[in-house]
Image (cartoon, rainbow, N blue to C red; front, top):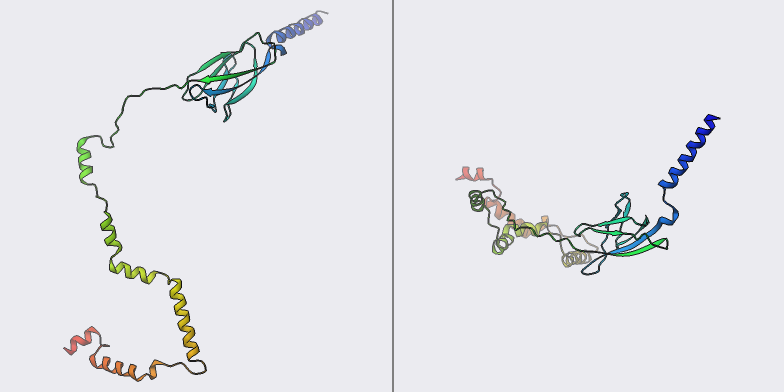
Length: 217
């Protein structure tokens, strides 16, 4: 009997504690609103909206809108980077279970002193770096380098033929095939003019190496 009395007293105490600890449904409201700037009335995205008593809350979306469940009488803290903090207390005399708010945020401007940043610790190091600095090329220097004859010849050799050149070469090959159709094409080995030039070059010693030319002298 004594144990039953103790258990009954314990459950009654727990029920009373729970009823006092948890707020009633009448105190809960849907707290919604929009956070905007005070000068241009633009939305302030990603603003922290927190209940100071519990630390719970939410964050505004890209359009500055927020909505969460709060209690009557809660102190709401609004904070965002670049803006001053604001507090709002939800009225405890509300008759409805929802409340809307348009919260205005003012810019938090901080004036900083002028700071000059130098990449060199001392004037002497700046002087050394300035004297050792390579002067960039001028347009004239770049033009001369681009028009250098050897480079231009190398570029021409490495360049692909254009469409006109390819067409001209193809037409010449086609014309030569038509001209010698049905007969053997000529061969330079039977060309007497080519043989005459070869004999003259051989007499002049064009085919001798530098060592052989030195011995002949």
